[in-house]
Image 1 (tube, rainbow, N blue to C red):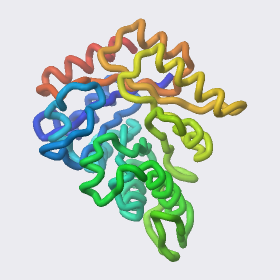
Image 2 (cartoon, rainbow, N blue to C red; image 1 turned 90 degrees about the vertical axis):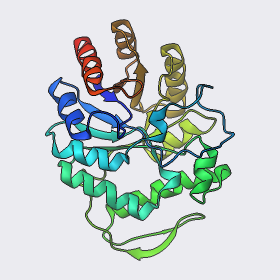
Image 3 (cartoon, rainbow, N blue to C red; image 1 turned 60 degrees about the vertical axis):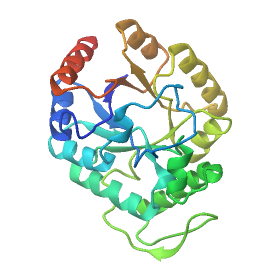
Length: 274
């Protein structure tokens, strides 16, 4: 099982370059970061855990800037998003940005893709929250076309363009790994049909993770689908339980943003689990 780190990165903590070096130096395999373009000052959408949002949500750096800084400061660390809010991003720009980071990093980028939960944030990007999942899948399909064809075209309900030439192409072939996030009525069918892996919701309890993986296995039969799981405040017992489930990669969450010294202590504690 691969083991990486998941953390928000804001303007009030350790810098992305330093974070990347510290994560890599401790033997972790990857660094994944989340995304929110903004948080509306007033919103009615329930939060994921029912609690008020922490300041991390409001002060997130752009994930692609964070990953680029971490890329140039490291040599082996895999660099991913958990998740990119694809329903809020133009697919042509998204394809170019990710391919550029893949080139800069020497082929170390992975895309965690989600539709987003904060409806008011989504609407501010001109996207109808009711159709965000279908938009997500079309934009991902369009990105893959751009990545894999010298002249790409796409004609869908939400994405439509005549042949275009977009460079650079990703270093990884046929393209960087794509992980679909979430757990809804159609999530697993979309994971299987798109050829993606499953990125389980952050901080999903291990018994729920096991239930989700069993549902996914039923949808994917007979081919297994790789899974990324994320745990907060993980213990040695948690890590072993996730390993026994056959998870492809475990991301250890650093929790709320903290001063640099505290972040390094958290990394040291997780490093002991390895």
